[in-house]
Amino acid sequence: MPKIDMDAARARLDEIDTELRSIDTEAGEERLSDDQQTRWDALEAEQTEVREDVAAEEARAAAEVRRAEHRARWGSVQVAPTKPNGFDLDDAMRMRGDELIDRAKAAIDDTYSRKAPEAVAEVLRKLDTIGNDDLARHVLVYGSPAYRSAFAATMLAAGSNRAAILSQEEADAMRASLSLTSANGGYVLPTLLDPTLIHTGTATRNPIRSIARVEQGTQDKWNGVTVGNVTTAWKAEGSAFTDGSPTMGGVQVDAAMLTAYVTGSYEIFADSNLLNQLPGLIGEAVDFAEMTAFVLGSGSNAPYGIVTAVSGTAGSLVTVTTRGTFSSASSADTLAMFNALPVRYEQSSTWVMNKATYLTMAQQVIGTTGVRVVDITNRDMVLDSPVVRASDMPSATTSGNILAVLGDFSQYIIYDRIGMNVEFVQNVVDGNGVPTGQRGLLAYKRVGANVSDVNAFRLLKA
Image 1 (cartoon, rainbow, N blue to C red):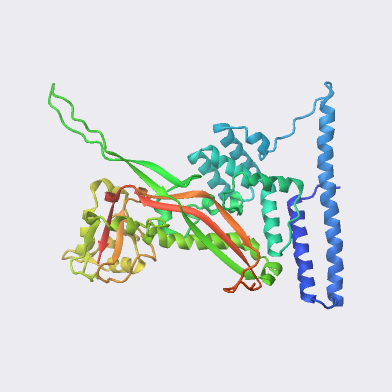
Image 2 (tube, rainbow, N blue to C red):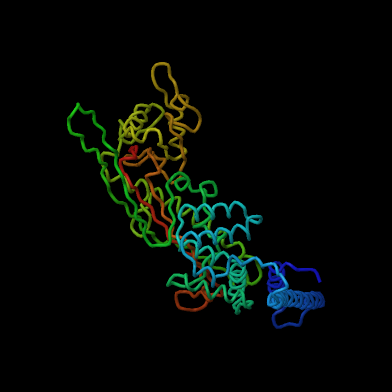
């Protein structure tokens, strides 16, 4: 018998189960129609056949292992070693440091590189750059094929209000995941579905995330060190050196909780593939929420938005000449903003503004010859610095609004606590505690942001 694709077979069993449930729900208390009965019989026959194929494949694989073990007992018989399972947690949990990280990289690369090369490349990059045991264990626990299939089966079963039927391998993977799951419970998204792991500058619509310094970790806070400039000095022969040590400081970024809650009727969860789409939909919703937070976030149970973090420093504000006015005649204000940025950050600065503000700047002219600001360099640049458009930046020139940010965004730190959890609410109730005939799915992640050097930014204030 040819070898079958076990993942595809298990997925087909889930599809058959969903369709049978749909036919039963549609018929209700009535007998099945002739068409329904014909389809029911065909599905049950296919279900039996697929289950037999799965059982046969599992038995064949187990028999191969036993035969290899038996032959290995005879010294005269050389048995080629079987390739170890990269996701073998019993083995991996005894590892530390580079050995554990290398195991996680090899397991992910060998298993998924052909199916999802971009996501795999990003996970490998994070394993290299973050390089700690907690991340490597996270990747191994939540990245295994067994956990992926167990997660899918659990979500589908929860949507139909039934218990998930898991193979022994899937049950073991789900049980192992409990050792890393936060105290709040829930199920962690599998590694290659997790936006905290595979978000990249090009994969997100979030403009600030694409230019900021992004760090990942497994703790509730990120702690970093800031370093000022080294001071140089000329000296005379035989005179003492001048101490030029830079000023050292610290920056801490707290990971706030961002949540998403989705409800749907019993029928939607039972009759559609909504659950398969939810990770992507949740990731998109999280992306849009972060867009606003990284611009205007209060810093209280939320990230510090760049405007919030900098606007409290008077020396970082450049106020327009005529309050409440910024127009095509305001080129002097644009130049003042550019000139206010410290020299240290001139070559690495980026503008962030609403598209309306950019269009206004694009019409501004400098000097008697009427050279436009944007023509001094090229499109999407203003005075040699690139422009990133953020719709959450104010567009109205109302007095007091922050119209643009200019600065070095490597000094704006976004911290993702790796891991995004999802939980099922089996029965949604109204204000009186009466069930509404809906189920709920909630997701949550931890993310924070803060500025490491306020002096790296200037804000244009209307």
